[in-house]
Amino acid sequence: QVQLVESGGGLVQPGGSLRLSCAASGITARWSIMSWYRQAPGNVRELVARLSPTSSTIYADSVKGRFTMSSDNPKNTVYLQMNSLKPEDTDVYYCHAQRPGSPSGYWGQGTQVTVSS
Image (tube, rainbow, N blue to C red; front, top):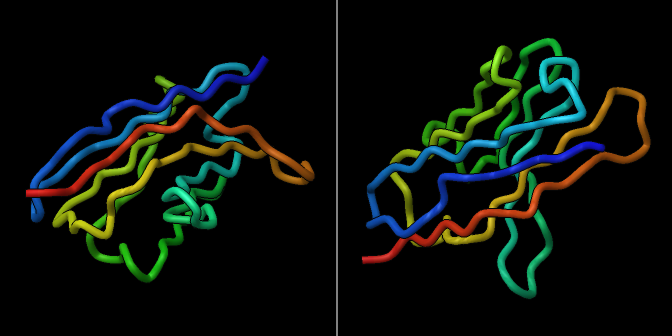
């Protein structure tokens, strides 16, 4: 059974930083396509960052230069370091894992990030 457990969300002031974690079990993160998405109520879930099995990363234009996705393979965990946070980064952030070639993947439960003064 695949489980993705996110943590690290919270309330932060504009300009601050947070690091989200996604601990995976039942799937090997280093061999999977690991992604972070975010979604606000009533909005479409959007891709924030993606880390491929080849270690290449892509980022949404809105977070380039501010967010960094990384992994700790022995811990089977991926991270999203978020710096210079803005109020518009306020969302629920979700971890997603997908095995290459698989038509679907797995979602975590989400973690709330609120950027406000």
